[in-house]
Image (cartoon, rainbow, N blue to C red; front, top):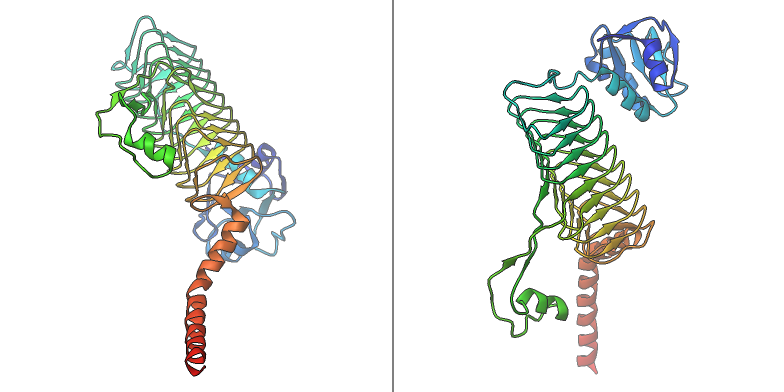
Length: 363
């Protein structure tokens, strides 16, 4: 798979200069680039290592002096990282899944497969499932009863789609994604210690320990178009209505979304983030790694929560949050600075107490 410099530049909407007919077989970091590879030096900080590699062409930054760097050609995008998304798309070799239906796949006669669907070894597609045209169901995947996948979906190996889950077009699921498990929802016959503690903010009252009784999940999961999910991520079924994820949202590895949650459009949920049951997350929200959202709260549009933030209450739109419990990032920074000064402040107070004590004794 090779492309000319001109072809790559045109595909990513960037300008190209020099010998634009040079062929590119792959990309590499500047110092390790081999002959025929395009070096990625999209920031001036990385340009100095170009001479350590053998690249004749590089993707640089807008206005870069590529001749002075000893190159024969260059691609000069105005937004290099965005251009990189196009380059990687062109050069991605994929997983090597073969087209067609593998003979070991198990497909129920009542399932409906669109044109050009690929089904890998040992995959299972259940009765009533509908798979959109051009979709790929990888090895050892499971698609449950009456589940629906839109056109062009891509399930890597070991993905599990539960019964009645509905997924829009262009969905990408990395290895180990699990959709449509029952929600973690249990209740006791009488008021529980947890309910008492929650009502009183700590006091468990007279509630006695009791066994937990399961609340079954009658809802499923609904996912919009162009959603991606990383390895090991999970979404629980809703109790009555579906748990929902909006169009364009991207979910990293090991993210969990609880039952009845609603995630808006074009959100980013980074690794190990967790969304509590019945929580509503607005559009264009970013949750950093290990962010936790309590259940039954509302997060407004365009909220950003920094890594490790624990959100226990509603957050209005446009806020940037940090810490545990979450506060506005600017306030959290002030609190952190104050904590760092606390040991010195305590020493100063102790010294002042000694002075006051001596003065009192002298009186």
